[in-house]
Length: 111
Image 1 (cartoon, rainbow, N blue to C red):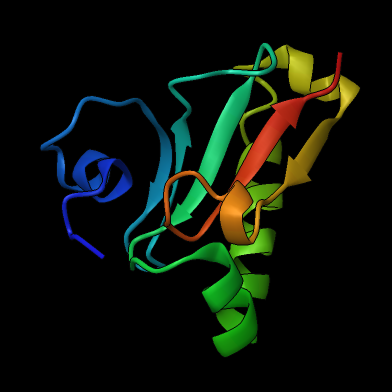
Image 2: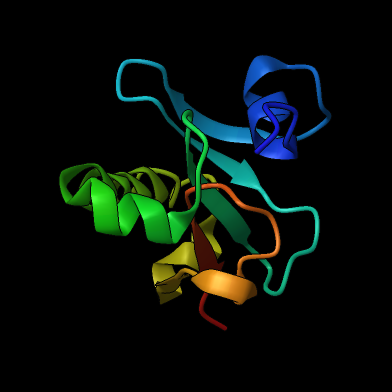
């Protein structure tokens, strides 16, 4: 895997992208997706590379921390993004369905 994937680039500031929230201490970020499927469609990503499935299988605690981060950082944005008061969905892709290999969770507003 290359270290020049777009998610790593967004974190480093070398790729365009919008960071909603960032936690350098935990190594997670919440970013806007470039291809939204809802009014709010963000990605909770790790700073390290790999695949979502590898993270789930090889570092379960880190995977569960990513889920906690996705939930808590999204809830913290409700005042700025009131549509999130209606709820949100978190999903992830494994295997061939992961179009860009990087540990990530999709966060979509409920509408």
